[in-house]
Image (cartoon, rainbow, N blue to C red; front, top):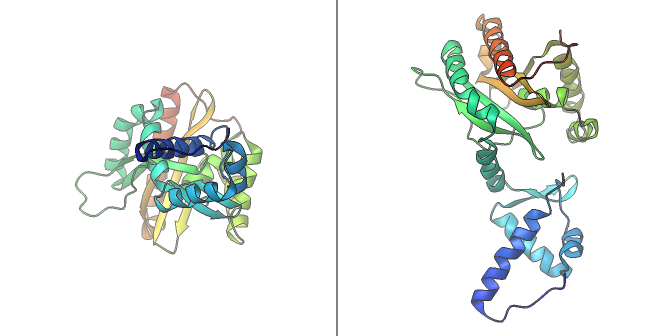
Length: 258
């Protein structure tokens, strides 16, 4: 479409909002990154105008600057709002009671993540009752590719090209370690990940519906919990909860797990 010039301040404001909507709309159909030239071509803008919109949107956290590949991805504000929206999906709705029971059984935080073009996004969080200090996540948080939740999706998603792209985004040695974990999760149906940087660990299991893997259910705690006697106890409860939710969604795990 040709670029136009607004004649009044009010019209300029409306046009700016409209243009922001058009730029965000370019993320449809699986697009995860935009470039200045691509936006200019798609919306009929000159490159300077496209660049001005993109940098302004990045400053407001609607977009984030990406270096690999270069361009712009969705910002954390949009992803948080998206996390709240996808939180209305059926798996999130029916998981509430089961997550509450699981959190109280294992004594730590439980999170449920759904897959988005930016990776797994936290859609629901349940903290245990009676524990004064807990680790937690904010709904809408995008989980890194090497976390337990992400590895669950990488192991069971059917889009092999997208999975490979996610793995290639990791530097070495993290990429090789994560590839090995993906293989392990495909055998066992359970994922573990430890972050020495922030002293946390995650245990995650897949939830399946009729279309395949639809969510990752995770136990989140401090790094010490991954080495104490509660570890196998927690894994058992986590797997039981994920299997229960899978059954309630009418799904089934692949036959080759285990």
